[in-house]
Length: 77
Figure 1: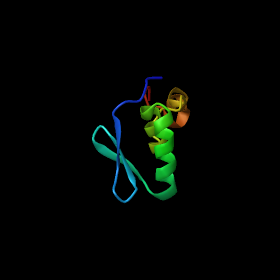
Figure 2: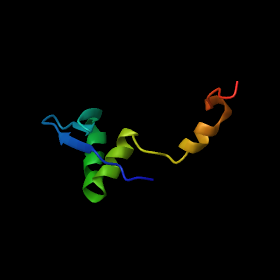
Figure 3: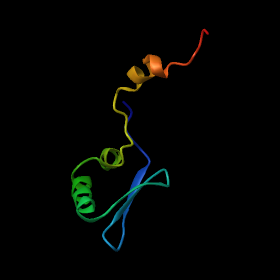
Figure 4: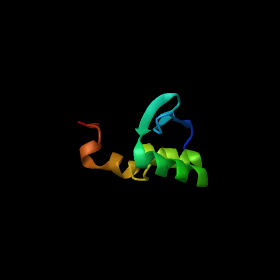
C-alpha cells in the first residue's frame, strides 16, 4: 500500500483545524475532535494521521470490491 501524501492542515484562530489534500479542503475538525487530532498528529506520521481522519486512505479491499459481480463491467455481453 503506498504511503499517503499531499495532506496539510491549518489550525484556525477559533481552534478548528482544516485539513487539505493537494490544496483542496478534505475536512474541518472543531472542538474536542480538533484537540484530539492535534495531539495525535504530533506523535505519529502526519500524512497517515490526516489520511485516517479524513477517511482518504486505502483499506485493502479495493480488488475484492472490483471483482464482486455487482461491480464488474458488462464485458462479454
